[in-house]
Structure formats: C-alpha cells, structure tokens
Image (cartoon, rainbow, N blue to C red; front, side, top):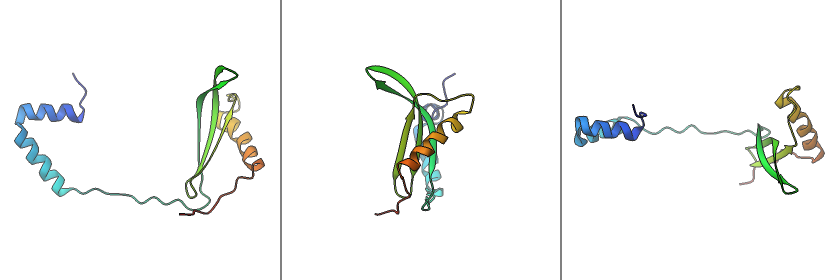
Length: 116
C-alpha cells in the first residue's frame, strides 16, 4: 500500500469522486478556515542551547566533533564551539556544556540589546 501523502490522497479522490467534487470540498474548507500565526517573543537574556555533531577537516583528516551551539534570539547572536569528543561517562550535555560555558566567560560574551 502506498504512503498516504497529500498528493496520493488527492489523486485517489480525483479518481473515486472526480476533480470537481474534490475542488468544491477544498474551496468550502478554505472558506471556513483561516491561517493563524503565533507571535514569537524573545526577551533579552534568553538563550537557546543545542548539542550535536559535525564533521570537520583537521590537518587534511576528516573527524567528527561534538558541538555546543548557543543562540541569543533577541540579539541574533550565535556562539558555537567544537570539542574533539564528548565524554559519555559524564553525560553529553554536562561534558560539553561545562567547558563551553567556561569558554563563553573567557570570551566575555555578553547579551546585547537588539538593534533593528
């Protein structure tokens, strides 16, 4: 059985019910619904942190590194630091975030006000 994608359902309905009927149902549905947007709010001082992996070339050799990524949505600033490995015995987040936070302090990264 094929995957039930929107295109597959549309094609099946066209065959079983006819294009005109599908078009009428979609038109009625669109008339009764409206698009909704949720406003995003990023207060000053709010940070988002992600952990992950990437491949980098070091001295001509491709290596996998652990990443710490911190974004500051209010000011659109980003801080990324790569580590040679994670320490599974300490837990990924704890092993990466502690040195990353030390590095952030060393680089004197501060939360900047938004200028736009």
